[in-house]
Length: 126
Image (tube, rainbow, N blue to C red):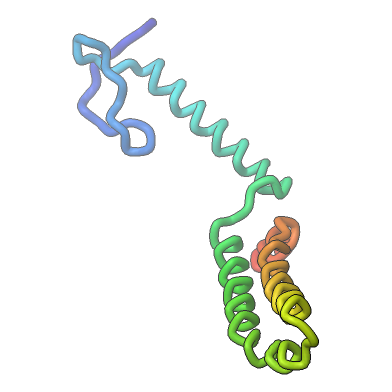
């Protein structure tokens, strides 16, 4: 393995270069690191194009939308179910009405579709 002395410099991604015990920088190791990082970058790009990875912003935006919709639905619950609960013939019927309304709100959160996020992402890129 060839090692050469060079001036002190920053390595790949701002990390200090790998040095052997004598303080020499191992250029072969540095080249291998660059190649590995390049391969990782290409792999991430390919996964993104295949929609196996999602942009953080798109996921965050979708979750913010879903949570704001959920919040609005939860805040509407009292006025929505009040008359139904008052008209219920029994405690069990009132409980079933309330549970159904709560489950309806929760189902909205369960509907996170990665394909939908990828479509939103693709639309934003255009």
